[in-house]
Length: 227
Ligand SMILES: [Fe+2]
Ligand SMILES: [Fe+2]
Image: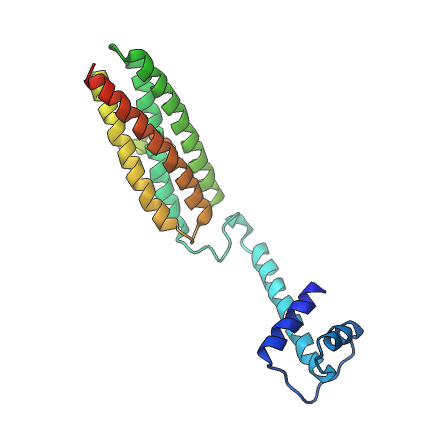
């Protein structure tokens, strides 16, 4: 009923009605068209328009049934899926490297600010693992394979795994890694834009946390340097 009303309103506004050679039989349509003061002889044209819109629905359903192995990726996905999976695997590798680097720093932190720094390191490590999991899940949704082969992770990561000799070294390396992640994620947000809003929102959420990490580490670095 609502669809019919919409169609009638649409055609009233465009005034594109044929006026000859049309037969009308449907009483429901007759009632609606009388209410809108549209002549009955125009109704078949409108009925054919309604049917063609139903055909569109059928096409959408048919497409959804096709290529089921593509999962969440429908034919209207606007980006190159393989390129997206490769990009996300780069982000996944970066997160995994960050998990390991922060974990190493948690165990190896020393010096006067050891307690505060270690607490921050383990929290960041756990949050980076959460990011890795979210990215891996999205890769899977897109029909790709999350790359977790240790032999490939270091090469695919945007940031390097640097241990650092002192607490100040560690914090400096962490800050560099966070800044690399922030820049990369900002570029990814622009890339996904409106073409893949789900992945864009995911990366925006992670980006906000990386900015908090960078802020925390910058404060600790300042305190450690001036201790
Ligand atoms: Fe992260
Ligand atoms: Fe981070």
